[in-house]
Amino acid sequence: MLWRAPTWGLERPDLVFSDLHERSTLWRAGILGAEEKLPVEAEWRREFEKAFALGYDAKRKRQCYRSADIPEELIRAWSAERKRRAKRIRRLAADAAKQEAPGSHRATLAARPTPAQ
Image (cartoon, rainbow, N blue to C red):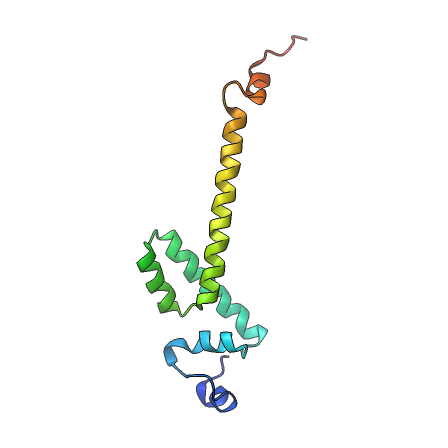
């Protein structure tokens, strides 16, 4: 269970309390234990991926992230991860297309008749 403001507010008066940003504030401050942090991060990741899956534009994605209280640090890390993944997929697809292109060594071997036995 997440610590509520009366508990962590007394221990960390430097943290600004807000009901809307409690989880991200606690996450940033390192107050959440592993049993609290992992489910919260998993929920944030689901919300992050859902915004992409629904095909939202950048503005709508940011609204979803704010609504889910996803920390900016995670948004940047996950966005960079998605970009790297997309770049890797495009590169692999281009390599596969190049190998299968007419005149390529692989295409020439595939088109060559096999000896009859």
